[in-house]
Image (cartoon, rainbow, N blue to C red; front, side, top):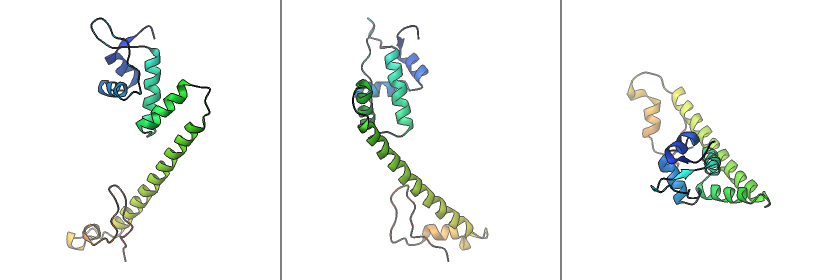
Length: 150
């Protein structure tokens, strides 16, 4: 890069929206950049590299607090990487749990579709399954294991 850039250019280069960049500054993930006499922010290479790090971490689903810790570790490369490993392992467990829930959801939808005779709504297994009593409803976005097709 040739020099500091205003926030709009930083957003374009990093792929992070302007309000999100401001939010990252507000929550302390991104240090406040120097400003021009006209009070415009100017972002340098270090800011853009940090934005790339934050964006990649967000794409991987890391929460803001985890990203803050990871950035602190990056800022002090002499530290043990054990905390980074621990944070990544926790995220991996979260992803695996979500995959398990989505796999169960997929199986449930496949059972519903397989039970559908494509006749009238009165005979529709999809509608019947959704309208039936479910003693153990799942939380939002989770598949219920209470459905069964006979």
